[in-house]
Length: 340
Ligand code: 5GP
Ligand code: MN
Image 1 (cartoon, rainbow, N blue to C red):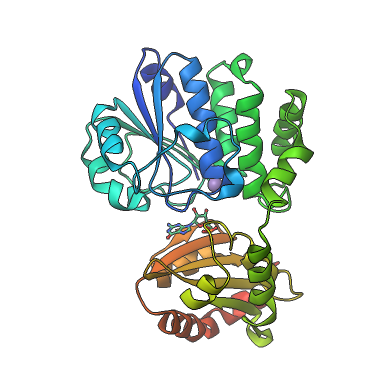
Image 2 (cartoon, helix red, strand yellow; image 1 turned 180 degrees about the vertical axis):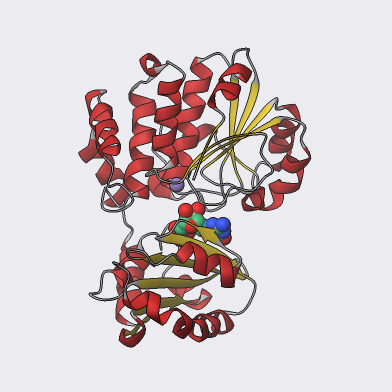
């Protein structure tokens, strides 16, 4: 699925604009990486740029160049409202439906600014004026690299932009282990290293900064909370709000936990159900052809990619898990043969 209104976007950017870059709730490495890379680049082009996220990002991203300037709608509401009102252009980076802006969505939707999508998720909504939407790409950060190249501006790439793009690619591909079987991703990574990005150092900053309680929460999730259903090729983990409290849960602490459930041989579908902020946040992961985007969309009002998707459910933890278990048999034939 491709949609590239590149020439029209280039035309709009030919004069200085007030630009607001927005990204999705629970921002991850690609959300923050692509937004900050775009922001630094567009500032170099002479635009006035702000970055806004609905809520806070995990601590392991708090070294990223430019992160101090990000506005959070949940914290800096008044300032966010001002920058939304002032914007000539609003960019949606790493998400494709304004509903993922939570409380900021109504105001952004009402804005008369030109709305631009730069994203790699499936099924973009039709609320954007211009789109660069390519789902067969590792990350929105990789798309930002392509965007800068298409603008003829690769000479503006610097180490800071490179570190942001690198972080987005690495975090969205599990350190180049999925969604990255394309030569181009590796060529771009090589180019970023050439620019001075220190891959080893960034890997340590992102992955080797666990708190003791985060590591113990991971251990508990696997040893006590993992349910394996071999006949259904499925494994899942549930974490209640009491569990999270017990392990002093901080934003980002459960990032990656669901992948351990998927690492079991012949398990092709994994889920993590987490009771957080009065809702149940679900993460789905799959192998091969089994689409968790379809499953999340059909049953949980969520979405994402074929092999990584999510949803927010307004049912209890028990009800959400019960629904999941109930629908699994209908997917049995697909779950059996994911590598067709
Ligand atoms: P995660 O499980 O890491 O939170 O999210 C996996 C993928 O699904 C990400 O690409 C994320 O943007 C997407 N995703 C997560 N939650 C939701 C949701 O509630 N709705 C939609 N449409 N996508 C989601
Ligand atoms: Mn992404």
